[in-house]
Length: 229
Ligand code: AMP
Image 1 (cartoon, rainbow, N blue to C red):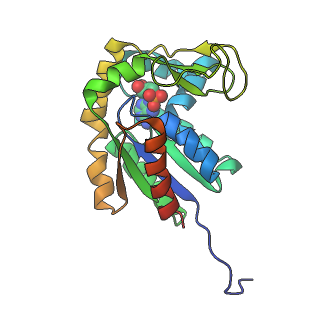
Image 2 (image 1 turned 120 degrees about the vertical axis):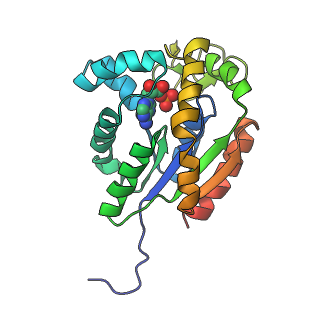
């Protein structure tokens, strides 16, 4: 029975908005560690579905390789499955979701149904011209997923992951110049309008994501600390 002295803690729902290469994945992982939230990347979930050969993965594969967006139906299905797992109770950082007006509306409805709302949508602001280079230089540890970049973030010991000591790295099939150009187009046509949606809801925050990784992490951390008190 409530005593009137408990502090009600609501699950935190953070959204990272930004084009491919803005640093959403890198920053989400840093926020995850610092604030004990769970990073939820629809791109990662879709890549896992492709690797497992599930029906959703089979349907998504060619679309992802072209740089276009996977259908809302498939994305919402895999997201709902993931959100149903108990580890998301403290809160989530949505990385790469929502990406369309339909997804944003579905998220608003889903949260409203459980008495919640988006805590903050943080737009990582970057220059398009720099994004192709950022994306085409990146690679990740095959074991733990830690992200690296040919120019901006090499492992401290060449060939060994700083985080887990893994020695195998991988590059994404869609991180090539041609597909990145398509992904940027999809971002501007379908995702950038969500910035106005979240401004309208009064939860929009902006960060200059052309700064180096630690400076961006500092700016984001300040925002998250402020909105999660
Ligand atoms: P990402 O890892 O976020 O860069 O996503 C890689 C690809 O997965 C995108 O280019 C899309 O084809 C697909 N994808 C990821 N998230 C979404 C989403 N929320 N809606 C539609 N397609 C998505």
